[in-house]
Amino acid sequence: MCGIFGYVGTRRNAGEIVVEGLKRLEYRGYDSWGVACKEQNGSVSVNKDIGRIGTVDGSGFCQDCALAVAHTRWATHGGVTQLNAHPHLSCDGTIAVVHNGIVENYLEIKRELKAKGHTFLSETDTEVIPHLIEEKYKETGDFAAAVRTACLHFTGRYAVLALHTESNTLVAARTGSPLIVGVEREGLENRATEIGKSQVPSPACPAKLGERNRESRVPHQSYFIASDIPAFLPFTKTVQYLDDGEMVVTDGHSIIFSDIETGEERPKREIGITWSVEQAEKGDFDHYMLKEIMDQKESVARAVNQDETQIMTLAQAIRNAQGTFLVGCGTAGKACMAAEYFFSVVAEHHVNFCAASEFKVYHHFLKPASLLIVVSQSGETADVLEAMEVAKRKGSKVLAIVNVEGSTIAREADYTLLIRAGPERAVASTKALTGQLAALLLIAYALGDRLQEGKTLLLETSAQISDMLNPRYVERLSKLAEDMKDREDLYIIGKSWNYPMAMESAIKIQEVSYVHAEGFAGGELKHGPIALIEEGTPCIALMGKDEVQMDILSNAMELKARGAWIIGVSPERFEVFDEWIKVPDAGVAQAIVNIIPIQVLAYFLAVKRGKDPDMPRNLAKSVTVK
Ligand code: F6R
Image (tube, rainbow, N blue to C red; front, side):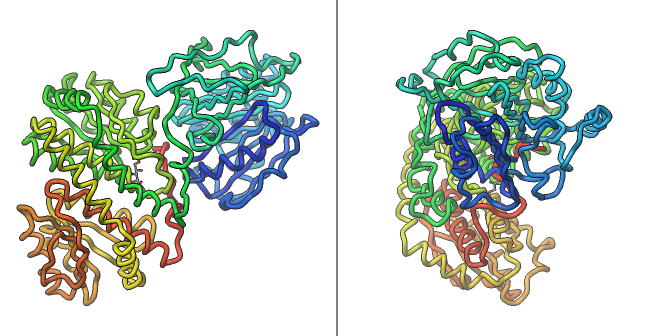
């Protein structure tokens, strides 16, 4: 849930580099931030504060600086204070550490370190890390070895990045939270090619890094170590992924990857990533959320234009499986839930949805012949990774549908399908959801031996979305948000695939505007929730021209009879609607188009209520803790 970024290399403005990178990682956590730089005199300077990094200018943090680490925090242990913000330092001030995740046994380690005379300034679990490394370094004089042995003491899922002034090195280690290295070679052309095709080994390392008193070697290339690629995207598209249980050490001259447990070196290939800097920036839009909603004019088509042989292979895996489970969290979970209907209607095939956080109880159902389909934008969500572990323990195969190429989930699955929505930076997931829905529907069509029909439908839907998201339409939703912005409760109903979309609508509205919103299956209203309806309560009905159209219309009438203000999201107008949000008739793909006006509405509700839709309170983009 936190953002980590570090730099070592030939550039002399490391403070500025990490601060600017941190701004691109701020979606991961934004309650406080901090930077540590190695000064010319060898000391460490630290700047940190509570709140967002916003317009902070890192160029003044240190002069002529080539080694720095930085962090944007989403608090878990210890409140949001300046002292609790990372980086944390060792007693002698030569080691600075930033950290994502949780050191579960920190209290015990802290007790032992205090007994040895270490002083602690914060309430965080993180602060034990620099002190334990310092203790280990006293024993060996080898910084990388000190980090490794310290890591062997920690329990929990984490990513750690440590800076050491004496050896001028960065050492990073991960056991659950993502870490990616960006490689920028001076004067050499970028040697990596498309993902999966490159096999460029890391430069050989002539000597162990991090040894005490060795002569500092002059960096001849730049290495960036970050929680996510956008941090270093302006500098390089050549990346190396750390896998769980691995660590990396670099001094800007060489780089070594190794196994934390055994200390053995690990060969690591370089991969060229395809995202562009422009895709990751918000351009002329006020917020990433609106930009990403608009990206759906193209992103749905990218999810659909997949290699057909691969789609048929995935469909075959589902056909052959004895039991298929679909898991995801939050918005991605709603895509999975909608897919239950897709597989039923399009392929007459039974699949089971389960929220990833609940899945471990389902292990009794799993067999080696079972299939787990996991859906995740980030590819790093802890609950999804846990579901994968559960399935793997039972020998079941895992198919991952992800957005972030090279993410942990993408790499650990048996089959991976990328939805290629491009970087999603706003905390609220929008274009990833429609990409996930499109990919799942395409697979359902392939399973029903109607791949071309599905592809045609989805590409037509993509064109309809492009037409729909015109300025007049967006303006109309902005006006509706203005009329709604002071209401504190809002309900959304749907049936069939519009039921998970009603739940997703509620998530979108809750998380960015803080309006109390709930999504229901229309038919469930009369079993309880209808008691909530008062004169003027806004209720949104999501509809399509389908076999359940009349059912949901009846539910809307039941609400209207109790005084509700009915907003119909539907291809057709009905008398019961007080407001009609017209959507194209997309047939089986209706869920994909129906959610889009709600995303726009949620965005404007947030803006008109004075909230920042990109960084909602209490939330972070990538949930790497359980
Ligand atoms: C809501 C939202 C979250 C994510 C959920 C799963 O807008 O973004 O509910 O969908 O945290 O994240 P991923 O898809 O990265 O696994």
